[in-house]
Image 1 (cartoon, one colour):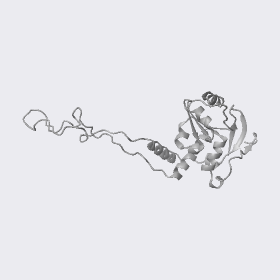
Image 2 (cartoon, rainbow, N blue to C red; image 1 turned 135 degrees about the vertical axis):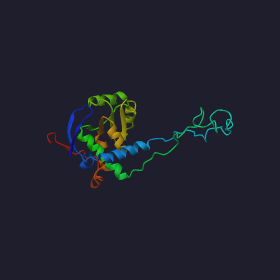
Image 3 (tube, rainbow, N blue to C red; image 1 turned 45 degrees about the horizontal axis):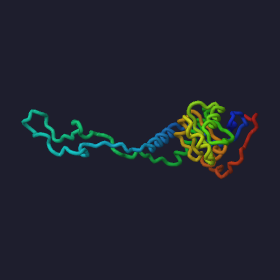
Image 4 (cartoon, rainbow, N blue to C red; image 1 turned 90 degrees about the vertical axis):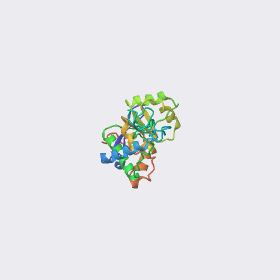
Amino acid sequence: MKIRLLDIEGKSLGHIDVEDHLFGANSNEALVHQVVVAQQANARQGTVGTKNRSAVAGGGRKPWRQKGTGRARHGSIRSPIWKGGGVAFGPSPRSYRQNTPKRMKNAALRCSISSRVRDGDLIVIDKLDLEQAKTKNIANVMKSLKVQGSALLVADGSDPAIFKAARNLEGLKLIPSFKLNSLDVLSKSKIVMTLDAVRNAESIWGAPFNREKSGDDARLVDEDVK
């Protein structure tokens, strides 16, 4: 399939050929949902904890005798119904981790990227060269590309200036191409990828027989080709 290629000023440079295996995969909402939920669960710390009646200090002595006082019977001042007592059925530290097979995560990523391509939310630019690592330079690029709201910027990861310039821009998340994941792809309004990032992604998640191909060939197609 073909995707339009733009420069950092938003001008069209033609079309590029991309792999259907990565950018034209069929939709599988159930798979994507399972993988995204697992990724969100794995991001949880799971360190929240409360003390039950056995963990709270004190309360070893019976507050008053069982009978004859006219008051309700109690065995400990650390009962959950007492002020300062333990918590009944409170949370405790636990692991929320879900193990997801690599093939499922890769398939979900292909489905996620392909759905964004079908929705017209993927923008591919030829390169992202910055003279200085300044936030305003990245902001001007996003403005030229007419990107409003949140965005995911995917670069090849070789230029540290890009990461320094983009880390302070509100709503923009920058990741290298080898860290692409379904959650980031689906959680942003637009996805901006450099051409090198596209080729790197194809070499990792593309069709098996194309993964050994070099990413240097831009494979530009004439503008008139639909």
